Length: 112
Length: 111
Image 1 (spheres, rainbow over the protein chains, first blue to last red):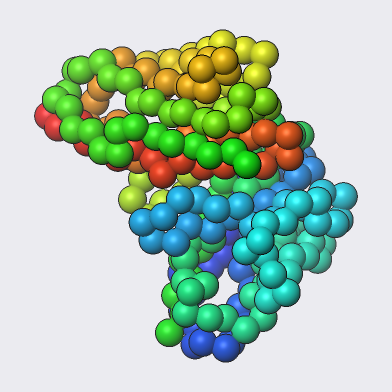
Image 2 (image 1 turned 45 degrees about the vertical axis):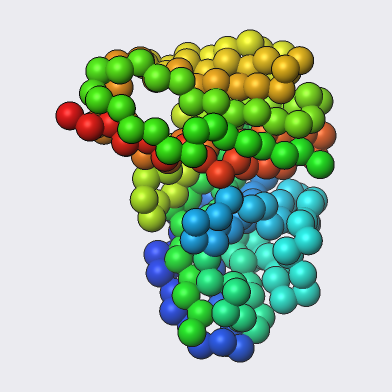
Protein backbone atom coordinates (compact mmCIF):
# COMPACT_ATOMS: atom_id res chain seq x y z
CA UNK A 1 0.00 0.00 0.00
CA UNK A 2 1.43 3.44 -0.88
CA UNK A 3 2.59 5.51 2.05
CA UNK A 4 4.15 8.84 2.89
CA UNK A 5 7.79 8.58 3.93
CA UNK A 6 9.91 11.07 5.84
CA UNK A 7 13.63 11.44 6.47
CA UNK A 8 15.39 11.64 8.79
CA UNK A 9 13.41 10.04 11.59
CA UNK A 10 15.32 12.09 14.15
CA UNK A 11 17.34 15.27 13.64
CA UNK A 12 19.42 16.95 16.34
CA UNK A 13 20.70 20.44 15.63
CA UNK A 14 22.19 23.44 17.38
CA UNK A 15 20.17 26.59 17.85
CA UNK A 16 20.62 28.94 14.90
CA UNK A 17 21.39 26.17 12.40
CA UNK A 18 19.36 25.49 9.28
CA UNK A 19 17.55 22.19 8.92
CA UNK A 20 15.78 20.59 6.00
CA UNK A 21 13.16 17.95 6.62
CA UNK A 22 12.30 15.70 3.72
CA UNK A 23 9.13 13.96 2.67
CA UNK A 24 8.09 11.76 -0.21
CA UNK A 25 4.31 12.03 -0.60
CA UNK A 26 2.13 9.34 -2.14
CA UNK A 27 2.89 9.42 -5.85
CA UNK A 28 -0.48 10.39 -7.36
CA UNK A 29 -1.36 12.91 -4.66
CA UNK A 30 -1.60 16.60 -5.52
CA UNK A 31 -1.86 18.30 -2.13
CA UNK A 32 0.97 18.35 0.38
CA UNK A 33 1.07 19.53 3.97
CA UNK A 34 3.35 20.04 6.93
CA UNK A 35 2.20 19.84 10.53
CA UNK A 36 4.02 19.90 13.82
CA UNK A 37 3.32 18.46 17.23
CA UNK A 38 5.16 19.82 20.24
CA UNK A 39 5.50 17.14 22.92
CA UNK A 40 2.20 16.75 24.76
CA UNK A 41 0.41 19.30 22.55
CA UNK A 42 -2.07 19.20 19.69
CA UNK A 43 -1.09 18.57 16.09
CA UNK A 44 -0.85 22.01 14.47
CA UNK A 45 -1.12 22.89 10.80
CA UNK A 46 1.85 24.71 9.28
CA UNK A 47 1.39 24.92 5.52
CA UNK A 48 -0.33 23.39 2.52
CA UNK A 49 1.08 23.24 -0.99
CA UNK A 50 -0.65 22.70 -4.30
CA UNK A 51 0.34 23.27 -7.90
CA UNK A 52 3.86 24.31 -6.86
CA UNK A 53 2.79 27.05 -4.55
CA UNK A 54 1.66 27.59 -0.98
CA UNK A 55 -2.13 27.50 -0.76
CA UNK A 56 -2.55 28.04 2.99
CA UNK A 57 -0.26 28.78 5.90
CA UNK A 58 -0.74 29.28 9.61
CA UNK A 59 0.60 31.98 11.89
CA UNK A 60 3.34 29.57 12.95
CA UNK A 61 4.72 29.46 9.40
CA UNK A 62 6.73 32.68 9.52
CA UNK A 63 9.71 33.85 7.47
CA UNK A 64 11.95 31.26 9.12
CA UNK A 65 10.07 28.50 7.33
CA UNK A 66 9.95 27.63 3.66
CA UNK A 67 8.73 24.71 1.60
CA UNK A 68 9.81 23.40 -1.74
CA UNK A 69 9.07 20.61 -4.17
CA UNK A 70 12.49 20.38 -5.77
CA UNK A 71 11.60 17.49 -8.07
CA UNK A 72 8.66 15.27 -8.92
CA UNK A 73 8.79 13.26 -5.73
CA UNK A 74 10.24 15.18 -2.76
CA UNK A 75 8.59 17.84 -0.61
CA UNK A 76 10.82 19.66 1.87
CA UNK A 77 10.42 21.91 4.87
CA UNK A 78 13.33 24.22 5.65
CA UNK A 79 13.79 26.04 8.94
CA UNK A 80 16.39 28.74 8.38
CA UNK A 81 17.60 29.49 11.89
CA UNK A 82 16.27 27.03 14.41
CA UNK A 83 15.11 28.07 17.87
CA UNK A 84 14.69 25.95 20.98
CA UNK A 85 10.91 26.20 20.58
CA UNK A 86 11.10 24.57 17.13
CA UNK A 87 11.75 21.26 18.87
CA UNK A 88 8.79 19.11 17.90
CA UNK A 89 7.62 16.21 15.78
CA UNK A 90 7.10 17.36 12.19
CA UNK A 91 4.62 15.45 10.07
CA UNK A 92 4.24 15.54 6.32
CA UNK A 93 0.90 14.59 4.79
CA UNK A 94 -0.55 14.29 1.32
CA UNK A 95 -3.98 13.92 -0.26
CA UNK A 96 -5.38 13.23 -3.69
CA UNK A 97 -7.95 16.00 -3.34
CA UNK A 98 -9.40 18.13 -0.57
CA UNK A 99 -10.28 15.06 1.44
CA UNK A 100 -8.58 12.28 3.36
CA UNK A 101 -5.01 13.12 4.31
CA UNK A 102 -2.35 10.48 4.78
CA UNK A 103 0.44 11.19 7.21
CA UNK A 104 4.06 10.14 7.30
CA UNK A 105 5.80 8.71 10.38
CA UNK A 106 7.26 12.09 11.33
CA UNK A 107 10.68 13.61 11.96
CA UNK A 108 11.56 14.35 15.56
CA UNK A 109 13.51 17.62 15.60
CA UNK A 110 15.55 18.40 18.69
CA UNK A 111 17.13 21.85 18.92
CA UNK A 112 19.87 22.19 21.53
CA UNK B 1 -12.21 29.58 14.01
CA UNK B 2 -12.84 25.87 14.47
CA UNK B 3 -12.17 24.48 17.96
CA UNK B 4 -12.12 20.72 18.53
CA UNK B 5 -12.48 19.12 21.95
CA UNK B 6 -12.14 15.46 22.83
CA UNK B 7 -13.57 13.80 25.90
CA UNK B 8 -12.37 11.91 27.84
CA UNK B 9 -8.68 12.78 27.76
CA UNK B 10 -7.81 9.29 28.93
CA UNK B 11 -9.65 6.00 29.18
CA UNK B 12 -8.69 2.62 30.59
CA UNK B 13 -10.92 -0.37 29.91
CA UNK B 14 -10.71 -4.16 30.18
CA UNK B 15 -10.39 -6.15 27.02
CA UNK B 16 -13.66 -6.96 25.29
CA UNK B 17 -15.51 -3.78 26.23
CA UNK B 18 -17.34 -1.68 23.68
CA UNK B 19 -16.39 1.96 24.03
CA UNK B 20 -17.21 5.41 22.71
CA UNK B 21 -14.81 8.28 22.19
CA UNK B 22 -16.29 11.74 21.85
CA UNK B 23 -15.30 14.70 19.72
CA UNK B 24 -17.04 18.06 19.62
CA UNK B 25 -16.46 20.98 17.27
CA UNK B 26 -17.62 24.57 17.35
CA UNK B 27 -18.22 25.34 13.67
CA UNK B 28 -21.06 23.26 12.22
CA UNK B 29 -20.05 24.31 8.69
CA UNK B 30 -17.69 21.39 8.66
CA UNK B 31 -16.40 19.94 5.41
CA UNK B 32 -15.28 16.60 6.78
CA UNK B 33 -14.17 14.96 9.99
CA UNK B 34 -11.31 12.49 10.19
CA UNK B 35 -10.38 10.10 13.00
CA UNK B 36 -6.75 9.09 13.45
CA UNK B 37 -4.82 6.71 15.62
CA UNK B 38 -1.40 7.70 17.00
CA UNK B 39 0.92 5.25 18.72
CA UNK B 40 3.53 6.72 21.12
CA UNK B 41 6.24 8.57 19.23
CA UNK B 42 4.74 7.61 15.89
CA UNK B 43 2.82 9.16 13.03
CA UNK B 44 -0.91 9.40 12.49
CA UNK B 45 -2.82 6.55 10.92
CA UNK B 46 -6.08 7.52 9.27
CA UNK B 47 -8.96 5.40 10.55
CA UNK B 48 -12.14 6.90 9.12
CA UNK B 49 -13.19 10.00 7.19
CA UNK B 50 -16.76 11.26 7.28
CA UNK B 51 -17.82 13.81 4.68
CA UNK B 52 -20.27 16.52 5.75
CA UNK B 53 -23.03 14.87 3.71
CA UNK B 54 -22.58 11.55 5.54
CA UNK B 55 -23.83 10.46 8.96
CA UNK B 56 -21.45 7.61 9.64
CA UNK B 57 -18.63 5.43 8.37
CA UNK B 58 -17.64 1.92 9.37
CA UNK B 59 -14.41 -0.02 9.13
CA UNK B 60 -14.19 -3.39 10.84
CA UNK B 61 -14.78 -2.90 14.57
CA UNK B 62 -14.80 0.88 14.21
CA UNK B 63 -17.81 3.08 13.56
CA UNK B 64 -17.70 6.86 13.42
CA UNK B 65 -20.73 9.10 13.37
CA UNK B 66 -21.15 12.78 12.59
CA UNK B 67 -23.92 15.07 13.82
CA UNK B 68 -23.29 18.53 12.42
CA UNK B 69 -26.29 20.12 14.12
CA UNK B 70 -25.01 19.25 17.58
CA UNK B 71 -21.34 19.67 16.63
CA UNK B 72 -20.41 16.15 17.65
CA UNK B 73 -18.71 13.07 16.34
CA UNK B 74 -18.26 9.75 18.10
CA UNK B 75 -15.89 6.86 17.45
CA UNK B 76 -17.29 3.54 18.55
CA UNK B 77 -14.85 0.67 19.09
CA UNK B 78 -16.44 -2.75 19.43
CA UNK B 79 -14.91 -5.61 21.40
CA UNK B 80 -11.77 -3.69 22.33
CA UNK B 81 -8.39 -5.45 22.27
CA UNK B 82 -5.02 -4.60 23.88
CA UNK B 83 -3.75 -3.77 20.39
CA UNK B 84 -6.26 -0.90 20.28
CA UNK B 85 -4.24 0.92 22.95
CA UNK B 86 -3.18 4.24 21.41
CA UNK B 87 -4.16 7.89 21.28
CA UNK B 88 -7.18 8.64 19.09
CA UNK B 89 -7.38 12.04 17.45
CA UNK B 90 -10.25 13.68 15.67
CA UNK B 91 -9.77 16.51 13.21
CA UNK B 92 -12.44 18.68 11.62
CA UNK B 93 -11.97 20.55 8.36
CA UNK B 94 -13.91 23.70 7.60
CA UNK B 95 -14.02 25.98 4.60
CA UNK B 96 -10.24 26.10 4.22
CA UNK B 97 -10.10 22.27 4.10
CA UNK B 98 -7.35 22.37 6.72
CA UNK B 99 -8.06 20.07 9.68
CA UNK B 100 -8.11 21.36 13.24
CA UNK B 101 -7.09 18.66 15.67
CA UNK B 102 -8.30 17.83 19.13
CA UNK B 103 -5.90 16.89 21.93
CA UNK B 104 -6.85 13.25 21.63
CA UNK B 105 -8.11 10.50 23.89
CA UNK B 106 -5.43 8.20 25.28
CA UNK B 107 -6.87 4.68 25.38
CA UNK B 108 -5.47 1.74 27.31
CA UNK B 109 -7.10 -1.66 26.88
CA UNK B 110 -5.79 -4.05 29.48
CA UNK B 111 -5.96 -7.84 29.17
